[in-house]
Length: 148
Ligand code: SF4
Ligand code: SF4
Image (cartoon, rainbow, N blue to C red; front, top):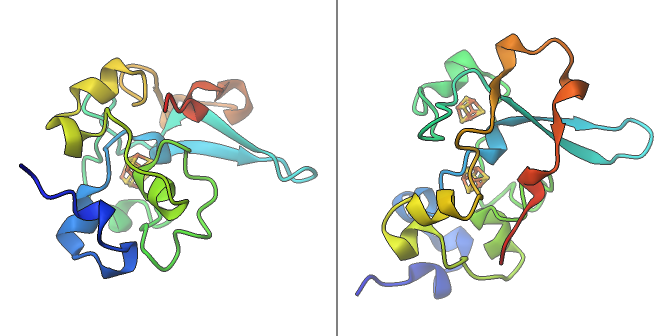
């Protein structure tokens, strides 16, 4: 049986491989967001970064992504407390907040299938940001869904 390292190892003590494996690959952090200047309210849109593969929900240039998208954010143990815009379902955010991994997480199920089936990923729900004129027209609520 696989060792559930995330239940025993603090985020800051994880190896790079363990850290990377926590990402469920939902793709929600690759959606454009809008923050209301006056209220600080966060809105998700379904307009995805142009490097996101809308079917697999992965980045098509992950290793070299900063060359193409300098504003992409690397999530680390040092900045996780500041990344309050990450979706509630995000494994990094969940573990940082003292929660466990949800039952659909690929580390527990062995694939992304249960995550897609639970409606957690962006699969089939996005538009390419390059085709969007007004981000405000793309505001959606489903990225905020967290079924567990
Ligand atoms: S939201 Fe979190 S778990 Fe989902 S793809 Fe982004 S970093 Fe990975
Ligand atoms: S560059 Fe890749 S990881 Fe970064 S937001 Fe775009 S698709 Fe996501």
